[in-house]
Length: 231
Image (cartoon, rainbow, N blue to C red; front, side, top):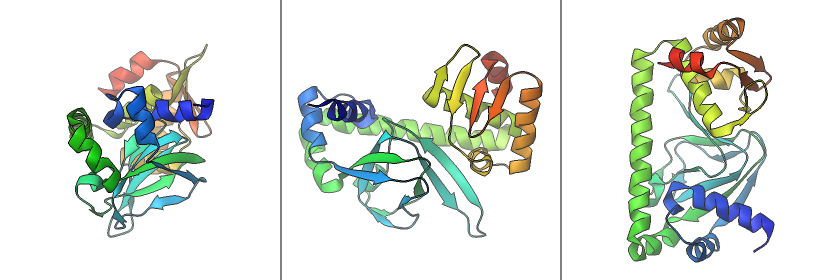
């Protein structure tokens, strides 16, 4: 296995569905998966498209979003290397419930329903891992709904930044550098608020010395205070 294949297999293993697999099983499963390369702004699939394939991000970032009847956009999540999406379509093939768009140059590997079905039948641990992953996804969805009802915008901004830092942050001398690659509008969509309100919250956090705002990135300078503000 060359170094690139090793990196890809590592990302496959990090995906919840495949975490229980040994090296031989990961390699066998990887051989059935199709690689997809996207540029920033490319749409992998759109809400309403038919789908029967899950994807694992091996490089870059993907955003999942939905559009309301009046044209407003809501950003459901940002996913990076080792994270998977589209798994519902494997068990219930049908229209996609969101649009997947590349936030950066992105590489993914996809697994179709016909390839996964034999694995689930032979390996109960794969099925159990899938159920756990879906349960965590449902729990996160419930938490997000609660935040929209009970948390104010600054609290939701703080929580979103901490989540992005946990997954994409790099510890530095000043603090945690988080390259989220999102525009101001996308960050606002992620927390379900207007761009003006989110920018106001970021400016307040910066004035308090909790973070430094950069182009499509932030440096978290005081994680403790941000955590308390996130509730």
